[in-house]
Image 1 (cartoon, rainbow, N blue to C red):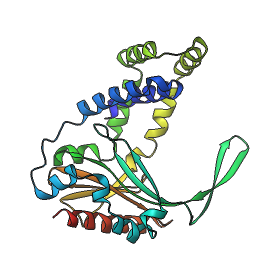
Image 2 (image 1 turned 120 degrees about the vertical axis):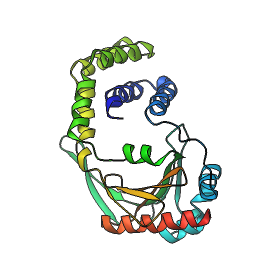
Image 3 (image 1 turned 135 degrees about the vertical axis):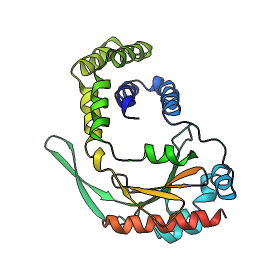
Length: 259
């Protein structure tokens, strides 16, 4: 996972400049992730099969949306990210009843207030095994970060960056911008920024599934059970402990529907 960050960041940088290349980049990203996270095989229990075979709306059902978001599905904004080999997400947002505002600096000197909306969702449903799950969702070590830094500066990474750049259908002007960004190390700056807090991203959790862990940055509970993983998020409070407790309760009720 760590050794691929430099490559992934470059892919994101390029695809942001060229929408025609996004689908290709998504496939490349799926390939890298598949190689990094081995397929866990087939779900072999009732709960596992339920999670893998049901549509996400059959897992995060209207009654659960009502209970944990506080509004009916009909009044919530629904957003689904198309399923890929790894990334899938279904979120419901209560846009009509924000719980406050937050200041966001759009650019230097330009600060604007944005509403803080209540959101719940599920994501990252896929087969895996427990050792792989524990290894992937863990805090980075000093050794991990050192490997990432080494990988970002390796000739292999630079070669892959150049190969991916060559495949993009960029105008000469845009290519120049991307090349200057890469030469200036912008991709490395982004990767280092993402690694900030990587040593403290996760904390222990319990009470649902065979094993679970809490992603503090994303406010998401990652649950392993029956050879399957699922991410459950409840962001309805400024109190992170409350969000964690609610996500645990929501996860319990989701799994109960699959028994």
